[in-house]
Every structure is written in C-alpha cells, then in structure tokens.
Image 1 (cartoon, rainbow, N blue to C red):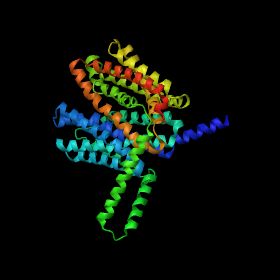
Image 2 (tube, one colour):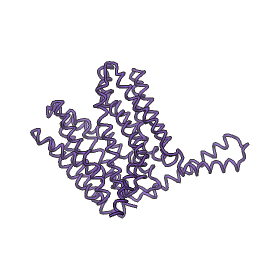
Image 3 (cartoon, one colour):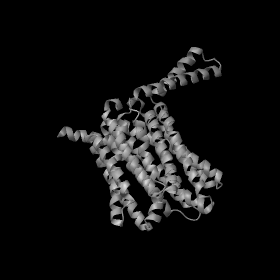
Image 4 (spheres, rainbow, N blue to C red):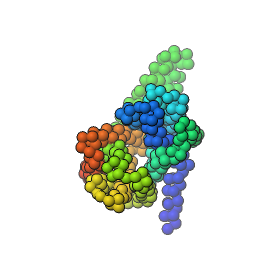
Length: 432
C-alpha cells in the first residue's frame, strides 16, 4: 500500500512539475490568443471593416495553418539541438510581432504578413509541449500527459473566441490590449524554461572549438565558418539517419497519423453552417451543443488518460474510434434536439477516449533520444490533415451537401479503425 501511494505521488509530481506547468500555461495562453484572432477577430474584421471576400479570408486562414504545420518538423529537430527556451521564446515573440502588425497596419498585405507570422510563431508550441511533457512524465505517464496537454489546448482554443467577444468594440483596442498582455505573459514564462543548450548542441560546439584550435586562432574567418558549416551538415545528416534507423514502424502508421486529423479537418468548416442553416438551431441552442460536447470531452480526458497508463491504449483506441465513427455516420440522420444532443455527447465521449490513447500509441514508437525531431515529424503529418481536411470538406459540401463531410469523416475513422488493427497485430514491427 505504501509503495502504491509513493508511486502515485511521484507520478503526480512528474505530471505537474514546474516545467510541465510552464509548458501548459504557454500552450493555454497562446491557443487563447490564436483562437481569439482566427475565430472571433479576423473573419469579422476582414469582412465587415475591410470588405474582403470570403474566399480570400479562407486563403488567409490557410496561410496560418500552412505556416504552423510546415515548420513543426524542423522545430522538433531544433528542440533536440538547442533546447526549449530559444525555440519557444522565438515563437512567442513572433506571435507578439504578428499582433503588433494587426494593431498598427490595416492593409490586406500586412494582414497576410501578420497571419504568416502567427502561423510560424505558433508552430513551436505542439513540438515543445508534447516533447517536454512526455520526456518529463516518462513512458508510464504518456496517457495522462496527453490528457493534460489536450485539456490545456481545448481550454485555450475554446475560451479565446468566447472571452474576447466581451472586449471587442468598434476599434478592437480593448481586445488587442488583452491579447498583448497574454502574449507578454507567455514571453516571460518562456524565459524561465530549461537551459538553452542540450547535449547535442554542446557536443557540436566542442567540435567547432576543437576544429578552430587545430586551425589556429588566426585562421581566415571564412575558413573557420566553412569548417563549422561542414561539421553542422555532417552532424545533421548523421542525426537524420539515426532517427530513420530508430523508427521501427509499419508503413500503415503514417497514413493512420494523417487520417486521424483529416477526419477532424473535414468537420471544422461545416459545423457552424450545418447547425445554423440545416438544423436551424438558435445561437443559444448551438452554444448548448458546443458546451455539452466540449464539457464531456474535458471531464473524461484525465480519467481516461490515467486508465490508459494503467491498462494500455489498445482497448481505448478501439472504443474511441468505434464510438466516434458510428456517431458521425448517423448524426445527420437524427431528428429532434434530444437525439442530436445524445449524438453530440457520444462524440464527446469518443473524442475523450481517443485523444489520450491515440497519442499514447504515437508516443510509444518514439525513441527517447530523438523525441523532439520525431514528434515534430509526426505532428507535421498530422497537421497536413488539418490543412487538407477543410479543403475537401468544402468540395463535398458544394457538390453533395452539408451532410457529406460528416459521413466522410465517419468513414475515415472507420478506415482508421481497420488500419490500427493491423498496426496492433504487427506490434513488434511498430514498437521499437
């Protein structure tokens, strides 16, 4: 009994260590700002104030997502090389700069620049948080850590668009002041992240110093820089080769990574439109649906994460995919608010089952010594689903109807269920 209590207390200290809390606070604050800008401020501001068409607004949002996802892989590699502090600090400073551009410039070209900066600035967030939290928690805490991370993400991205509405006026001054304060807090927290140098970078610096000493202090500057660049390229190539060699995963694993976020991306553009135009829900009813689904997900996340750590992720992945897929496939064929509310609740349960278990599965295949680079690579694949999903959703909605993306999303999750069955059967192939 004493050993069990001691183990539980140790695990709690790992999950809620100062380092993890710092990362979660940064994630909450940055996602709050990002959600407020992309959902509540920019669409309305660009449409009503600047008179920009909906198509251009859509492409503006796409620029942000592309910037976010394109840099996740390289940033994961940078985490392993130079540490959390410089990577995260650079990101939040770029986010701060994007806010300043939105405040002081109103021309559409500057808005594009600001949105691009926002995408690149928020790209270190997921690689840093997931790498740091899973590194701190260890293999036995993957499910719990993923639940806590997604709880911080859902809280930020959900509260941002709601809370910011109370600060929006004709000039948007109050809203932007709040966002600047929150990003300023993120900058301060980033300064207290762990040391900016990790083992790989220290070894590289020693290699540079050795080469410089061998060449002499009076060696030409360009010669010394060429030597440093050659060392950097050699070590980078070696590092990438080591990452490839350490990843013993089935080829099915990569389409599975894409499918999970692609299924969610199919739903994001049509949820509000379907609720307001097809279901004819009032704003209050729609808010109720969002609160019910989100609250159920949030309530179950941490308990499910702890169960995943105790019993393994296999059964929870199965249950989450089945519940989510079935709920989406029958969602558009249900009549009556009560049945719709039940379907929304079922989706919340399915998502709560899937988030910690699926991410624990991903974490199980990642080699500890290459955690940052591999998480960045995997997050890039997942991010592609969030970019491509909304595009396909728009095509399906225009050509077939608003119900089509829901059916397509359910079918994708069903295919993912089949894929991961083969991944589990080949467990020795998937996990190192």
